[in-house]
Length: 113
Image 1 (cartoon, rainbow, N blue to C red):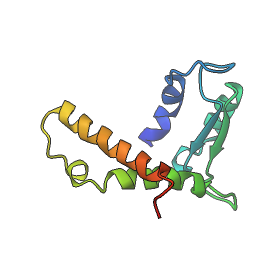
Image 2 (image 1 turned 135 degrees about the vertical axis):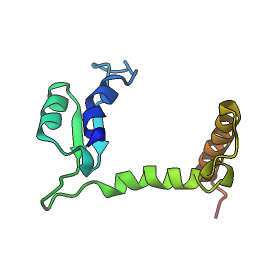
Image 3 (image 1 turned 60 degrees about the vertical axis):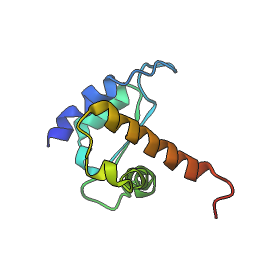
């Protein structure tokens, strides 16, 4: 329920400013954010909302969400990030950056079989 209250402040705080509106054009969210009030507000802001329904036959766009979940799982394959050994935040951030570089490298490498 706490995530539901934070959806609109999060969307409005995204610093893009690259289009006709200062916020994103589309929003992809899971069933936890299913609320008609949020759909109305996002529509008035010009944001196309793809939010899964809690009930009903509608698909909740699992294919698109799997990309994010797979990326987070790939980052957590690094033991130092799954269990945080570093006490200093800058060291942890450095290892997180290296893990993200590694994930991008493996996804973009054309010779990877």
